[in-house]
Image 1 (cartoon, one colour):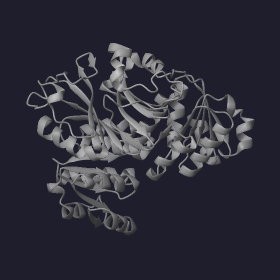
Image 2: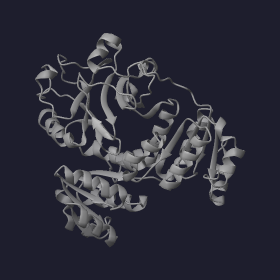
Image 3: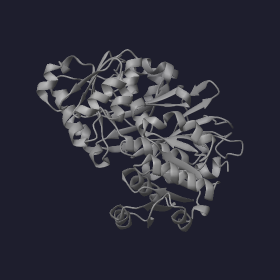
Image 4: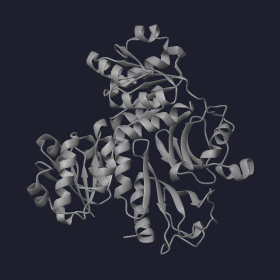
Length: 454
């Protein structure tokens, strides 16, 4: 598989790194020679210094022989023009584009149906805002996401010493919870991702990722000693695109919201765009301002500036002043292993959201979704089992899954099944799997051979 990436920024660099590590042929185009040099020195990819929207550069890069084209520069306009040129030169190449500007939102469907016929429009900020909204109402959850149009949820929670399942082995779950048992897909212990087995014990302080039916979420959380607590008040630090999008959603949900923004011109703009949100001009890391706004009485504080270090400090300050529920926007992946040790659990990342959206479209096999967790240490993969699949019509215990991969859930029409060794996948079933990063390549091979639909 050959993939061309236009844009060598953080998203372009990290997706190139990920795909190159899986032995895909990757070509990266960027006008910034320093960015190109960085890729050349650190990654096993081909690089071209030039404009990704220039037809000659695209032809020289081999666009006619390219399976997938990714446009992820910081300019929406450059990304769209690049896809337009690819559609003219090589219309069969699959096109993915990152578009972040609000003004383009109404045109996403048109971009797909008409020229430039883009296959997937990616807006990581929309995904981040949706994630923030999902985890706001579950104080004990550090991550929440959906599969199968919302029928199934995955949740990551940190176990306290008073959790009812602390010290239990997974094999005992069926005796304790019977058919209502959740499936634990992963355990993060001391920053190591563990795919559990039956004899694996749950320890105090473990971050566990479980999967359950959405309608059983509240009951399942109670099993773990957690609960759903609807948010009534929110404070957002940072009035950028994420802050603005989130405020509009919270207004629709009748949540009393305030934004603190340091740029006075941006404050004026937000005041015009938002109907109910209170916009405050000030420094989000100012303790005095927090005290004046009585932040300790706020249900949730979201640090959403473009500065990772500032977001970390703001969340720590809010926690120090008594806020239990904080959500922190982080862009740099090297921060992820350190955050839990300083008490920052709920983290969202536009970069990770973009990478997950891209991987979903790059994976072979009929993959419906691909979600990275914990700084890309592991992935949830949702796919369809087809008639010709070798994974169907036989017990799971007879299928050779790679080490570090687990079948998490089987969905058959309206039925949601937590699998066991005797479970049998039928053609047309949705299957949800989890794999640690080293196992993803082998799992994709299994999907390609067994579930291939090309």
